Image (cartoon, rainbow, N blue to C red; front, side, top):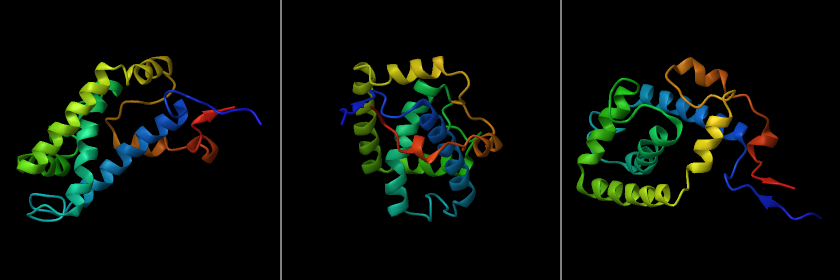
Length: 155
């Protein structure tokens, strides 16, 4: 049996493009379903906030740098409810410290060249959609095979 050579980028271009589309779709859904006054589900931090917060930090860092998105979390143009909640989360001292830790880690990864292959991949794959500004686009881009969805190695 041939050895599996893992691709450095970790997933195929098709899967990455589909995951970016799926991210926009889920952000759209979340923004429409937030029922909290200051946080995701109420006026105080809950497990929902603690769960989403690291992902928000990751998106805040990565999406503008790698995929050319606007800073979607720090303005209310795209997701006003998420923006409001994320702003409230960052005001909490423990959350702010967590954001700093996560941000510094991604800065180190960026300096080490972690994202360069992905940035090049997006430049070399103009047929794939990397930038989202319209909700309807995400739903049209979610077509990819289940084989591609689970593929991260080539034989």
